[in-house]
Length: 59
Image 1 (cartoon, rainbow, N blue to C red):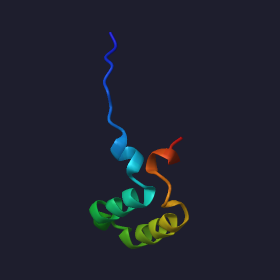
Image 2 (cartoon, rainbow, N blue to C red; image 1 turned 90 degrees about the vertical axis):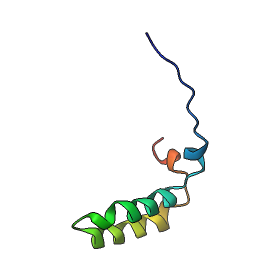
Image 3 (cartoon, rainbow, N blue to C red; image 1 turned 180 degrees about the vertical axis):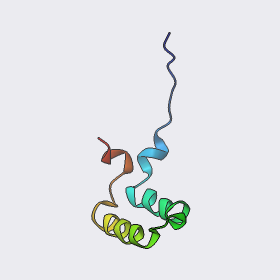
Image 4 (tube, rainbow, N blue to C red; image 1 turned 120 degrees about the horizontal axis):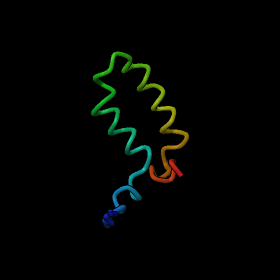
């Protein structure tokens, strides 16, 4: 049996990669051993591809 569910994608479509990366930095990266290096790399990513919607990156 397959179940079909309606999935609201509005939030995913409006979230930019920069938004997702910023949230990751605030909530996850700060707890890692290599937080400084990871933060530097993510800042570079934000500048280059951060304006794209996050769901478009995986396509």
